[in-house]
Figure 1: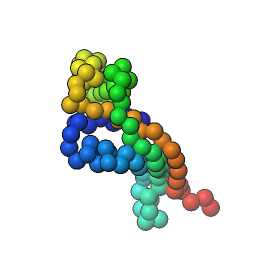
Figure 2 (figure 1 turned 120 degrees about the horizontal axis):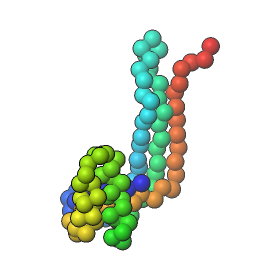
Figure 3 (figure 1 turned 30 degrees about the horizontal axis):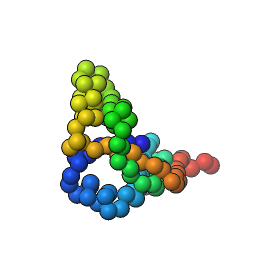
Length: 109
């Protein structure tokens, strides 16, 4: 798992002091109006953020981020290569240490 940021600012300063992170994702969140609840699937991952220092890995991570958020953009490859060589852009790799999941589905009668 990767994310990118500016090389300076609050996020970068906090991660330099303490690289521990927690990532949460929720999928299939569907309101259950009669039950006054929400059906969902979720996952929580704990780990640490590491700065990607190898240019090849940084470029590939940025390419994946670009294609995820702007699929079909013809500038994705060029943008990720340029970003991979910029020192003001930092890419973090999340090394996951622990994962837990949870779900709430429809009640079975």
